Image (cartoon, rainbow, N blue to C red):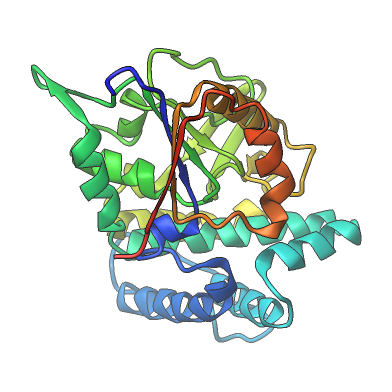
Length: 305
């Protein structure tokens, strides 16, 4: 088994204890908006409290709070986030689609700051991580392919490594953050098929990922994100490194899917965790797996605790 090529496919169920499934986003977004508002009111007297703008239309709530509430109401009138995003794309409402991605990134990032990492990642990773002379690594015959926008796997690795620095997970795991990146082939890969719900600054050919989940403690991470939240929507240098499954023009996502296909060609054991091959993804799933001729065993693992 040491040299057997093993690939884990992660779906929404893998992060279920921290991240709600997509159809529950709107209900959960309402709770998060209220938590943010209450959190802001509790820290208003602190020296480093971010001076957030009050929505001029209501003269009452913070802009981020009102935006999440508005998005929650919009999502309730559609079947899912994916469906609403698809409608915006069909209508060619590109700015609204961009704002939707920004709002989802803010929502998912704050959610992961407010909640503990799904502890099943810790249990799983502690069983596969290698430790030799103080160096921690993942076996080089293991790779991960994820349909999830969240950073639960990356965050769990950083926590196990005791947050050596905010990119701790990159010490033992390859994760593409931009299509121009060159990664170390000797390390295992985490392929995010839709990218990551986060933010990055684009400076020429350079991409700097803003990883609030790792760079700060929970409290400081939320403070920093709140400071940025009112300006990132209008900053042309800030982008969100994720796409919906049906978007075919995202260079980062295309590169991830190409690499996932190459990894699956060599895979001998495929372990599926929390993924049900939904309709939106089915065409892509077929393309990813069509050349997996070496596959001898497929295991579907239960994802709930």
